[in-house]
Length: 420
Ligand SMILES: O=P(O)(O)OC[C@H]1O[C@H](O[C@H]2O[C@H](CO)[C@@H](O)[C@H](O)[C@H]2O)[C@H](O)[C@@H](O)[C@@H]1O
Image 1 (tube, rainbow, N blue to C red):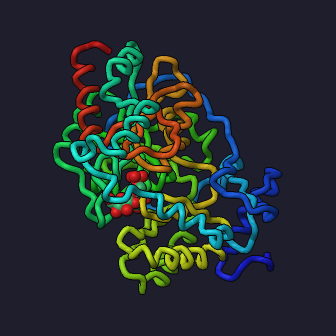
Image 2 (cartoon, rainbow, N blue to C red):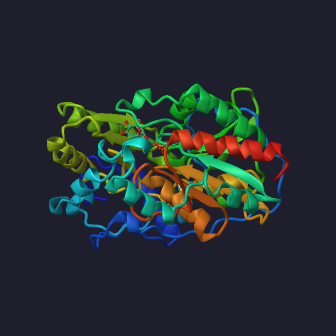
């Protein structure tokens, strides 16, 4: 313990280590310097084959009605991520500018992210069309999707920012349109629908405001799902709780142990970035976003360096990149893909041949969900992007939130026509 950096949550780490020793797992090896993102340990998903009715009651209560309660087990051993890296900090690559490169490429430059019409006959148009050949439009391929969905129960998973709402400069103002809200409400009438967001669950519920959905916040690390017997056998952190209306729900917070640490780091990040014009730190409960969208590009290295300086003292936290945002999150083997699997199981739809999960998202963190659906050949991933992106595990694409809305409406029309 003495070798721990100052500021590290020693008590929590002690508890974690004893849990790790019990289960003969290695949490963090300080031997090499590999990218944490490439080193996720795998964990077989549990199987529930008893489909039950889908409870569409209000499952989205504010966390104030769910005071944080420590999970029954400190950690499921399968949730521990093996992250070999040097103890000198996450950002050893920083000097080679890899962080900065990732920061620069994390969002389309405004000139390229133009509307469809502005694209015509430009190089960008050609590149986009080539990309579309790999990731065809989910609207143009709708018939194909509909054919595949015949006789199956569709389950919908929707990311929030950039998928249901446009990307805007101020994260507090990323409102979805009323038309989009109505479209999501309609689709949720016919298909079980969940929002899976990097935001805190409270915040994303505040934006969406629909009681008929399921919500997973903090990149899937804070889920409220329907009560499902046996699910806690595989997920010891899953506890039975009550929603605002007194209805029983399952609350799953696999990173519950990290809450004090996240709050501490949030404070440090706010403090150390306060003199950087345009920088904004957002507390997403089990993860933290450091926004640099409004920071002068010349100061991006300063943002990266300051975040690195803080994280050096927290080897149990890792960093991922989003759209002009650095995301700080716990080192656990849990992501949006695992959240999809968890919700499918909770809904009684896990591993059934007659279920077709569809996940729509725009960001790097959504790739985990695309992968889960692709690997098991279970469903479809739809990537929302107006520009060609690096290779994706999605099957289809949509250009922007307005196309997402059109796609949701098409699903409703299909259902109403009884073609499913
Ligand atoms: O998983 P998501 O629902 O897509 O959330 C991911 C992050 O989205 C938000 O940031 C992004 O959208 C902002 C508003 O349009 C934009 O200003 C920012 O540059 C984008 O990165 C949110 O603020 C983050 O906390 C989420 O992690």
